Amino acid sequence: QVQLQESGPGLVKPSQTLSLTCSVSGDSITTDNYYYMWIRQPPGKGLEWVGYMLNRGGTHYSPSLKSRASISRDTSKNQFTLQLSSVTPEDTAVYYCVRGSGSPIDWGQGTQVTVSS
Image (cartoon, rainbow, N blue to C red):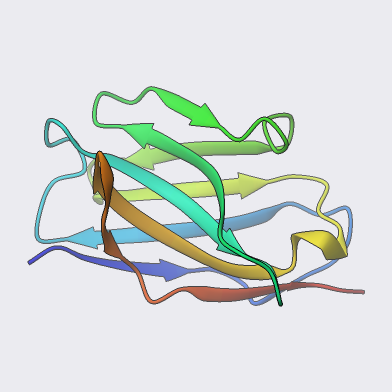
């Protein structure tokens, strides 16, 4: 069974860079036909996709976040990372890492990130 676990700071100051890591167990992040995605949910709002990485390393980002988001991976650790620069309080959300093939399949438990001075 594939499990995903997010980690990172719960509090980030405005204008700083948010960095989150997703540790994956149960399968390699390079397995064919799967993608790994970051999704967030701001308080009182719906789910919003941030970006995703394909098994071969290609990345795609939400148009609204493309200028600030970057997804990378460490295949030796079976982890992938989200960096979101120049954060504002509007980036406050629960961030989830997700594995999918077509539709999302496996979700991490989510991690709360608050942007505040």
